[in-house]
Image (cartoon, rainbow, N blue to C red; front, side, top):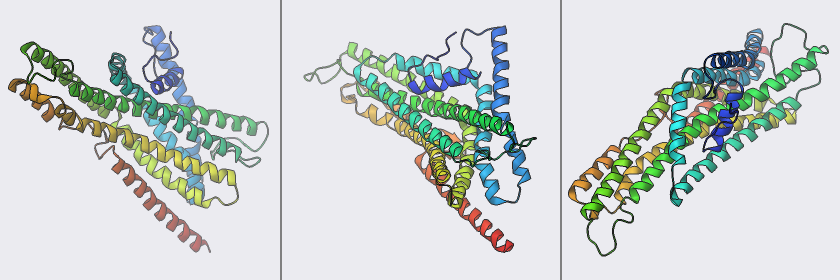
Length: 396
């Protein structure tokens, strides 16, 4: 059994290996009883890591009506509700997701020329930077939240059926919260990175197709000839046919990504909108604890970055998809026969159907969507602040 997942992309290696360790990405050689045991292990992991946050849901009912305390519970509870949704979706769509991952891996490993290799490396470098940035923001936030807990208080609000202020219950519960938050945070980053990297690989494949179209007649003619010979036409037509097949394959992969992650992404965006709002509310409510203030600031940045990488990669996918027709036009079409020009025109016309990923069919993943989410979060934050001020005035 290979514990570390083999993939051309560093981010997918880290993400899928983390999911494999908790029972959500089975090795290919697990069959029969081994597969059944692994599924049971995954169920236990899900129950343990996600089930522990039900204590926050109970606490929310206990403190209902107290907006500052409710926001203190909601900002992490919302994250973990989205976390549970993505876990369930990953389990239900695991075979389809694995097919997309393997297909992209095969294509990106097969590139040979220097320009194509550079494109693959650039994609790998970009997704690696996103992963490391996401992890850094996440764990800086966790360290800040845990170290800002006052003596005798837990770092995170939650309800437990025992007195957590007494020893050793306090120490054990504190340690349990630290462990669960650290593990679930890494898994949450892994799932988000897996999705955004799969989208990144899609637009990387589109970029490779664009490169192939530009170099369609490479090494087939010299500067003296005004047209392609019949044999050269045959080679160019075969290359164009391969580009058309690859283009259609990428568009189908984008549709599969849409089917796999559209609904969870929509749920994630709605939760993120709420979390950004309540985190901003918590941020302006913090006055005495500087460490807590800084950790809430990094958490706000982290949640914003989470939404950004989805929207950025979705935007890049649409951009690279629209560039296919331009790449086709940049090839020396004037050397081709009318028949081959018509074939090239068909590819250009087909590329007008831009590949895109939507969140639940309501909004396309783009930088415009990112700005809309930030604006909506600010509007909700303003409303929440007004409600809290009215409650304070009423109390006075």
